[in-house]
Length: 277
Image (cartoon, rainbow, N blue to C red; front, side, top):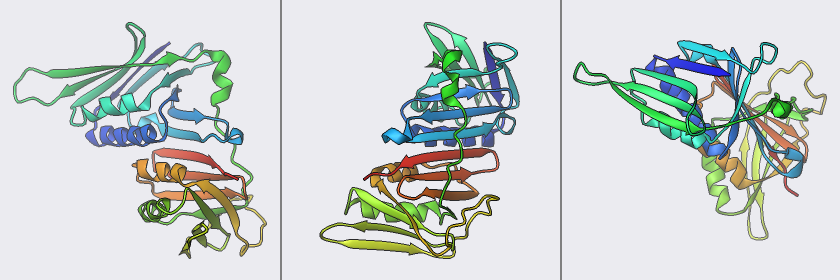
């Protein structure tokens, strides 16, 4: 197995760093799946058992000037690594002004992603900073656990208002309750609600629009689908988000699941949060 990539554009480096920061806020460990065309960051907890899941897809051509890899075999031309995204995020933050950045899969005291950055200098002598981020190689027999999740059979799909607006609302609601109800319909309406013995608060959003899925639900457009969430999980997603999506949408499976999607021209991030009773 071999992998090496090179980033030479500062904007691409900063964007890649922001994506890693977002992922590091969502999970302590994840799987990095490398293919010839894409990088995937995957968290595959069992949603049915109360865990969250994540699928983040990056097109390597939009970040890397050079990208070379050889997978396990020609037929299975992939590499799967377990990595702590916070370690990658920290390494990238220290080299944000690099002239060039190289990432390479190496074998030192253990398998590592070695990040070598050439930093600007006032002299003619180049200055290179190197970080070794430990990783674990995932055997091929486990790869089936890290395939793209299926789109859920949702009841409602809706575009989200600005994520900063939602975050401000959720931050306030977190001080009043540990749980939040999110409901939406196919008429572009969404509500965030908390209800306790002492207080009932609802924030209404209208005219959000609904994505034109080919197999969109035939549900009555005025009927609300509803999910009850641990407010901390939604807050974690909103607080860590630095992808700056061009579109953000939400699919609701009534009383079961919320599926959040952030879309950028070169990044797609999906996040699955199960409901609570």
